[in-house]
Image (cartoon, rainbow, N blue to C red; front, side, top):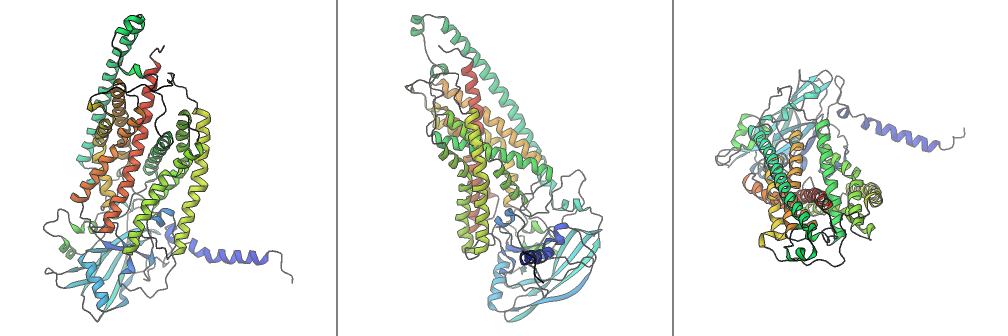
Length: 639
């Protein structure tokens, strides 16, 4: 019988579909199970407690694998891949609602090399992370005796899994079976599984990982209230000063217009009106300036949208909180430590108030994936504001400006990540993307390049064209003089450099308390979930930044210095300098991080965060100041 045309291809496609079907049907993605259906225990990472970002693959330590056949794992999201999440199957046989009695699942042949690896991990307080049905589990590798001479490995994993109907709602791990590490011996690793019925609802199963006492502390509420009152005071003060001062200026300028030329020449000519012919002069380096403004507007749009999505969809920043270990783990606490080292392993009761926010941790890397998607989708914002500003300033190389604006932030982030990746490779950390793993590297490169060249760049082009056509024509209320006006000498505190340095103090003062909570959620073992606070702080930051830059610009123009564009941008962007300085304080006084990898990781990404914050604040300050400058010169009659 003659085969139909294309039958081999259809058969191959059908076979491929059948091969992929079991993987696509993985029950941990649907979060529903049938009785005695397979439940997968994934092993994620292991690393020192104090260096949260310094993590390694679980089996980089000489742990053994269970006898069950492994299951191949694939990355669900780009954010998961970029975060170095590489889950490996534990080999343990776990079935839904099927208890497992204590039994050995593998055996470690402990030679000297393996013992040294375990001893090093115990000395550095290594802990490991696992997942069951996307629920994180933590445990400690081992402990030392009081004298620090003998070292012990926890060999027994006692799992207690709570279920509600056909869903898993709770997982607890108790590490037992302490065995002394002696070279040339065999260590048996064992486990047990106990299933318990639970009343916890599936949508509330992550409540126990939250820490309301930390984020909803009275200090947090007081800081928000203090910042809010500062905003009201600052806005009122700025409004009163500017309104009274501008009213006097308008009255004085109106009186001067009634004078004849002789009286006007004999009078004192000073103030912001005298620079009306130069105030709308294009800024120096307009290509870079407009690219920074466009990028800052995009960062603001991304921040606003991601916070709103996080409030609605309950995204999370990261997952490192709690587990359940025996009381002997308290030996990790030393007298000179201000914080318990085993804080991340404390038992947290799942019973929280029903009005608490709930964090959905069902997708690892969801926050990063959302941020990447939103950044790509908001590229027209970058092109519109950057392209229109560049056109109004008379720029002609708009294609070059578009490329710089589109790739400014991605190049900064990728460059920093590329540098840190070399250090991670040297340390063999799990966050490293080794060049030997060509499939993963190629996949990430293809994904990033596709996002940049097929999403970000075309959308930026659309925004640039719209910006140039809709608002690219200069419509200044004052005519620009052909010859620049000389800038008179002024007192030292009116110099742009001094204004830039002082401009970021108040904006930083309005957010530095929230910076502590954000830093703690990212660099310590807390889950940030109070995105309502973050939204309020973002609004406060914008208002304070605009008010401060308007005051700085008014004083600058009153000193007859028309170089307000870069001054307004940099005075607002200087907030990032104070944030980065605060990160040094946080690193040395609030953490116990150590080592080249963790130090470079911390200060590298804090530099990226501070730079992005500075660009966003600079764009906000410039946009507000630009509206103020246009308003005051529109209301003045210019001959």
